[in-house]
Amino acid sequence: MMPSPNTLLIVNLVSTWYMVGLIWMVQIVHYPLFAKVGSEQFVGYQISHQTLTTLAVGPAMLIEIATAILLIWSRPAVIPAWAVYVALGLLAIVWASTAFLQVPCHEKLTDGFDASIHWRLVVSNWIRTICWTARGVLVAWMLTLVCRPAS
Image 1 (cartoon, rainbow, N blue to C red):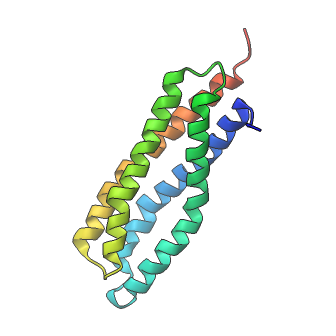
Image 2 (image 1 turned 180 degrees about the vertical axis):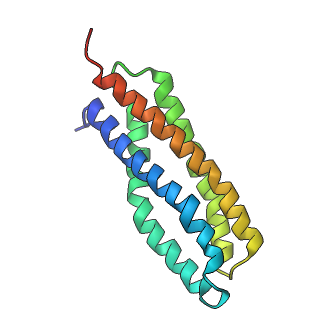
């Protein structure tokens, strides 16, 4: 049984804003601190980081993408179709950036800290930070349409 359109939207909003908060913490605090770990501990730190981060972000990202896709077929009537497609497009950019930019940087960093790879990771992560933030605002706007009193 498919959840109601409003339920899909709320679950999508919650998972999106979880990721917005997390990506800002990663961008401003976590990734910049990689440079302070120390070369002797860095490889172990990086491997642990990848494992633990997957546990923290994996479920939310899967819930977010699943509900974003389901909203294409089951969106609240007051939400324009373009908004659902733009929100999904932003998520596609996030996933592509993760797969083709951030994950390769993390994989290279398992060999040891490299300042140029670290810099590429921090700079390229702005793609996800901006797209997730824009998506969060867009999905919140969609919820305001659903919550608006009927005229």
